[in-house]
Length: 589
Ligand SMILES: C[S@@+](CC[C@H](N)C(=O)[O-])C[C@H]1O[C@@H](n2cnc3c(N)ncnc32)[C@H](O)[C@@H]1O
Image (tube, rainbow, N blue to C red):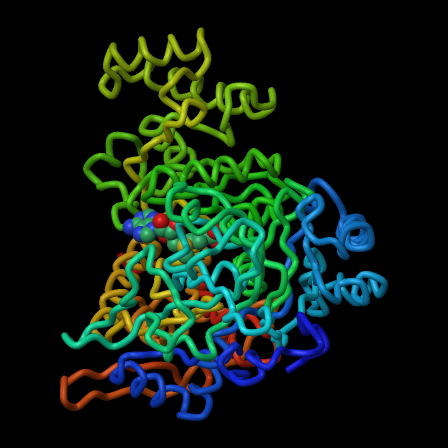
């Protein structure tokens, strides 16, 4: 641990007496059955290392450059200039790097911002952070340290570089005034009497600095930094939102990129950048991103396609579809069409499909889509570029022609609606007015490539301070959900196409076992080799839980070499992530 960045060189007697209390040494809690399962998969030592790594953030930020708007070199120089200008003070123009010892780093420019060393990822930059730092939490002689306890979610954000916001504060010392220095610690769920978990702190609790304080013992080793209160104690618990504590010293110092080079860069975990590359989308293709929000991989795919072709981005949440559209507009990407749709229903029923034309024809598939879902390309506000409006209008006109030719499929109301839209612009019923388009699904075999970045247990995300909520049963439920989605992906991709499946969990039941399921069920699928290959191999073997008569099969040695697994405890220092690529042969239906 680097102690050079200590908040103060000479800790007070009070702090020294309780030195190990004011440290950051979290231990991730799991359900015992889940711990056993992971120990069986990874071996006990490796799982302990993974568990330890999960409780800490990665020590760098990974930035993907929008190469349609800028070059990697140009962005690198802009970031280095920002570090040189602002890195010392932190937060100017949103770029905040190493507030205490950031000076040393800023002068070393190149060592703070550098290019990703892995081949095939030339549009990726790393910005170095630092930590864990040993901090000294000073107080006035004969006074106890003033403290703030924050929620777990709040602490996880603070560890990634955020400030402490009001809703995240659970408890605060008495007599805290605006401008006071406070030690910030986190309250994590503890085992409850009923066998569940409880945080056990009521919001607004007053801390006296005594051993009788809420969770005094449990918070030992859970101090994430020190800051200056932006308001008094009473304000913190009266005002609904805003910053409660401006962090001045942190156990991890990571750059934050609020409003920096908007549209030119996207902050994205390295494995996510890799997943989009592995899909290998080509300009002009038709791609489906089944679970797309907030659009990180969607936009990465669009850039790889040079914004030529069509990406259908789905999410079941309205607001999240808005996020995709907003991001696409910010990055000036026109080939993305985002729809609200439950991916479990993304294959259009064949009896509806047969009216449209021959199933599998790409042109027909596009028409079907247009009939159901008014195209809405990257439009977040009515004043978007002509280019995107043009393409949207063109689609609507094509659709109308088709409908006029074939009156079986169109009501007069629909015609009137479309005519109005053509005269008056898109109106309220589109993403510009805060509404997004629904879709009824897509024809089988109508996509060249499908990305299923599945919703998952997210047990690879870092930092994670608690994992006790997952049971073997809940993990299995995630796996069932993912298989159902995968079944849809298999139907939608064309023969000769590609499916990429990814998750951000370390759970083999949602990763290797999904691959096993896919290869057993669909004989026309085979694992494809991946480029770039940055992660390690998958897990070989199987798991048997005799008490519950449960067996889970993972991979063969050969298969394990074809998938990519990102281990959070490896030197790559990434989130836990999994990628499998399937080549699709001739379907047997
Ligand atoms: C892992 S996140 C996707 C991240 C995204 N691919 C990216 O890189 O930015 C999973 C997403 O799946 C969405 N989701 C969950 N269940 C879904 C369903 N049945 N249909 C469509 N989307 C779903 C969630 O709303 C969430 O946004």
